[in-house]
Every structure is written in C-alpha cells, then in structure tokens.
Length: 259
Image 1: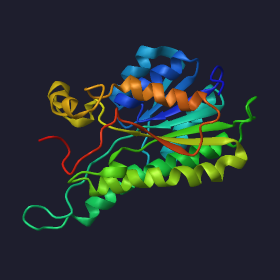
Image 2: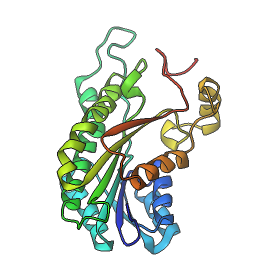
Image 3: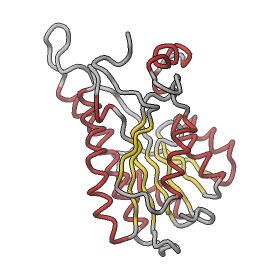
Image 4: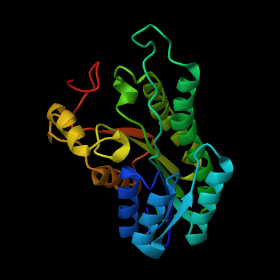
C-alpha cells in the first residue's frame, strides 16, 4: 500500500491505540483524519502533528457524521486506509449478585457501539475506497478493525462486550470476500491487555494487576505496538480476511485478572 499522497481515516484516533496509529501513518507519509468524539484530545493531537492531520468530531453510529469525516479525508487525498479503534461501554454480568438480569438496553448499547459502529465505519469507508484508482498492487484500499481477545474468551462481566467483539471477528472474512472484487482488503487485530486511558484508572495500578499474568513480555502492551501491527497489515498486500491476536500469549480466564 502506497501511503505517500494518500489519506487515512483513524476512528477513535484521539485515544491510545488510535493516536499511536495516527502517528505511524503520518510518519509514513499519509494525511490523516482523526475521527473521534473526544474533541479536546483530538484537536490537541492534530495541533501537535500539524498540517498532515485534521480532527473531525465523529459519532460511529451517525452516517452523516462518518461521511463528514470521510469527506474531510478525501479532500486531503484519496482514502486508501481506514483504521477503527473506537471505544465504548463494557456492560455487565448476565445476572448480578442479587439475581437481577442485565438490562437489555445495556446489552444492546454495547453491541450497537462496538459491532454496529464498526460495520458502519467499514461500509462507508469501503464505499469511498471503491472510487479509487487501483495502486500497482491492485489495491483500492485496506480496512483495519479492532476486536479483542474477549471475543474469543470473554471473562465474567463481558457478555455484551464479548458478543460485540466476537461479531467483529466473525465479520472479518465475509467482509473481505465481499470487497475482494474491488481490491479492498479487510483485517482485524484482537488485542490483549494494552496500557491505555480506557481503563479509567492510573496505568501503574493497571500494569501491576495485569503485567504479572502476561506470559512474555510480562507487561501490558504499548499503544505503539498495536500501531506497529496495524501498519504491518496496511503495508502487506497479501494480508486479507484474517484476525490476528496481539496479546503476548495471554488467555483470559474466568475472571479478568488474577484478582
């Protein structure tokens, strides 16, 4: 994938994994739209990186909002790359300790944001890419989605999140098959435990909890390691229709950590 002269869309680009990916794409010569709801953080990142980037406040469940972000990218160059790292709520247990069922609306909300939102990004980015001229490799674009190892082995309290991420895993191959005739590749990264602000508490405390249970290296992943994998998918024209775990060998147990 030739990135010089191209544009890229990074959804969730103001967050940990997304921001690291934005930095890698800019370093590789792409113009990047940082698409996120976090306006203050997104604007700060765009200001730091300069004219190669632009922040667009974006809601993954809004077609108009996503189309505005895509249009902003196309203004900077043909859109050949879309990376989706957006976050959202986690849900809860199927039944709480008192036997009360998880509110159906809460389950639907998690699936809506993660799974439906990811497909919304994928379909609209693909529509824009379909208008590109093929590169020398025959590619018109590449789409990278973000699942989670919770999509394979969700822990207690992850019934909604596991279902949503499992759905992203499950749609990878059929989406790649759907888009193959257009020369658009689709790949998915399923991260393990990564040190990002999404945990909502001090990262040193999170590292102390998770680091010891990771086989090797015995630490949480760094956002740039996610970005490194995203770039490998983008740059390798033979990677398509596959989900790759990025987890240092960890497998979630029944509870989320050793505690």
